[in-house]
Length: 433
Image 1 (cartoon, one colour):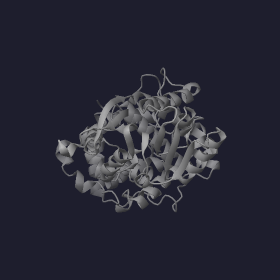
Image 2 (cartoon, rainbow, N blue to C red; image 1 turned 90 degrees about the vertical axis):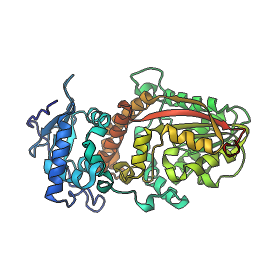
Image 3 (spheres, rainbow, N blue to C red; image 1 turned 180 degrees about the vertical axis):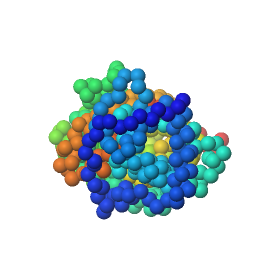
Image 4 (cartoon, one colour; image 1 turned 120 degrees about the vertical axis):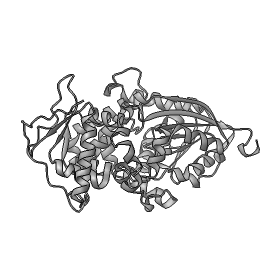
């Protein structure tokens, strides 16, 4: 397919300047040789030319933001500053691609559509012979992002302690920050909370939570799962590393009249003691880090009472892609989830079995996450003024819009999936077989 270059017509005011103190790597393109920039433009330009996308050179004119594309038209990438766009990619790869968006150097009339195309063809963006040079091109993950007990606290606080008010602006009233399970598509805001409760209830059913069940939740969120477990008659210990989440979860649990059944603690999963009939963890394994997956699953096994059940919800990615990502400092790890890594199904199966856990059920529902992210993204964009009023600037809003759109594209392209798993204690430890 040939890329269609079209001129820019409608224009809007240039974006506000980037705060250099807050966004030092965004305020201006990095230093990069002319040769490296030219190579990036040649390689990426040719790759884009083969994809179902249009590339639009803005020539300094910024098109009116948010104008929807015509039905059936290809998603368009509008490059307001092509030289800066390719220089950033030449210097920093996909980190540069994301920083270029944060800087306002490119836009799209269908951000999710464009990113879905790129996600579906991620392995085609660099010619096969050049992929062997990947390690010389990409950055390694910073040592300070390792998920030691201290590092985990800092990594979690980077994202979840931004502001409870920020999350309140775009999450549904259940304050659930993980994939919902919808009864029908397309999803709508009116059904969002019911869909989040459906997700929670399926996990509680998997874990067989009922009156008198001793429940451990690893990763509190803002308390909705603990509330619903306690409403079933369970006694719940829920742990988090986010002080913001702990404080609001305690308020919400007390407001529900369940403070006597739920304990919320600021504690690392590695430091939890006790024996529990049910251990539940929702999209927390992505923050554990590959280096600590064995400790995570060993902890689940150690904390499980005889006959107990573990219910997990986890995002997954293909195994080979996971192995590459594990070694790479990405835009997501730099700006959104430091220390995070999405596991593969194979990694989960291997690490859980090594810890003495048997997989009894495993069901995927990635389409539901795509819809969840769409609802979050649309509401986040609608709440631009309140987000600004909280002290977050335009660069932050562009960063978060890209994060939500990038994640949605991952699920729409089937690059990512989300699964609910039931694990039980293996009666025969693996090492004795």
